[in-house]
Structure formats: C-alpha cells, structure tokens
Image 1 (cartoon, rainbow, N blue to C red):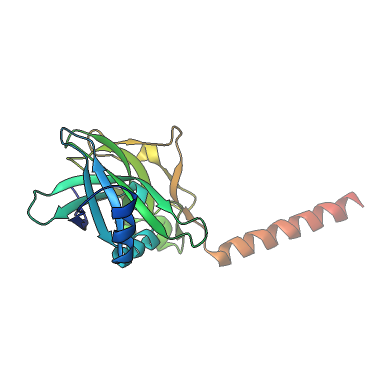
Image 2 (image 1 turned 180 degrees about the vertical axis):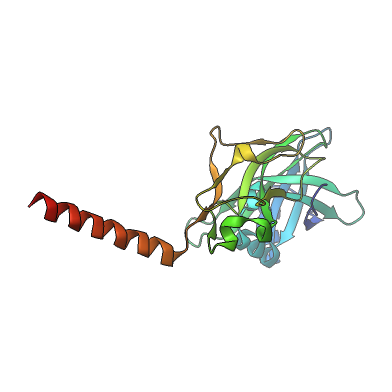
Length: 211
C-alpha cells in the first residue's frame, strides 16, 4: 500500500531571470523551477517559511512530494537541489524534478515492529534495540510502501534482524548493498551485569589456581 505523499504548495512565478527571482525573495518566497517529464520547465515560487520548515524536518532531498499549483493538475516531484545563501545558509532557489509513476527513486521508509508480546526474548526481559527506524529503499514512484514490517514473534535474546530477514514490497530494493542490521534483542542490563560479574569471578579463580 502506498504511503500518504505530503503536499508541497507552490505558486506560478511570473517572469524569469535574476530580476524576477530577486522580486520573489523580497515578497517572501523562494523561487524555483520544475522540470523533467514531457512538459516544459515551469517557474514557481514557494513561501519561504513553508520551505524552511520542511528543510528543518530533514529528508527533504529524499522525500516524494505532491506538488500543488492552483489551476493545474497535481504532479509528483522530488527535490534535486536547494541553493543556499553562503552566509546565512538559508534557501535561495529550489529545483524540483517531475516523476512518472514508473520512475525509480530512493526514499527512506519507516520500519514497524509487530508481535513484541510473542517474542520469548522480550518476555524474559530482553530489550528491543532498533538500529534503523527507517530504511532507504529504491522504489517505484507509483507504488511507494507506507512502511516495512518486522515480525518479532519467536525471537530470543541475542537474535538479530537483518534486512535479508524482512519481506520487502515488490520492486523495492535496499540502496545499501550488504546485509545490514535493522534491530536486535539484547539481554537486560541486570543479566549483562551478572554475567560480567561471573566472568570476573571465573578469572579470579583461574588466577588463584595459577598462583
């Protein structure tokens, strides 16, 4: 099931060139261009405060947006560049790429963990340690998964979940070419402490025997 694609509202920018871009900035907008697909490039502008907020939320360059411009059909876009002021580090221009539904893109997908109550390791006091709450996948723009699911049923203390253990949506592939860890069930701190103490005692007995 495809996830909810966030909207990105923009306005058509009248005029092009440096003069029109400067005017947009004076009016409280960030000028930009939408290009790609079978349509001519389009000059747009996005409210400065709106864009800055989205940039601060993170993952902006790897998030698919539903671009909404009044009077036009919505189009799916992904950011391909944000120019910033060299002194203030604030956005001054944005480039957006139109995507077809069949386009392949890399996005971070949320990981959901289920059936914790059916994991013997957790029942014994083990702790679920999440290494990657999100996984970057190469997916099709028209079929973006809302999440990937990790089933913890039957997992014991010490068990590890690798990306190869997860069933990914059709057509989705990890961007990292190795079998990385998503999560593990570690021993409770009390048990780890007692094991360390036992280990210290064993070492002390061995040292005494050697003397």
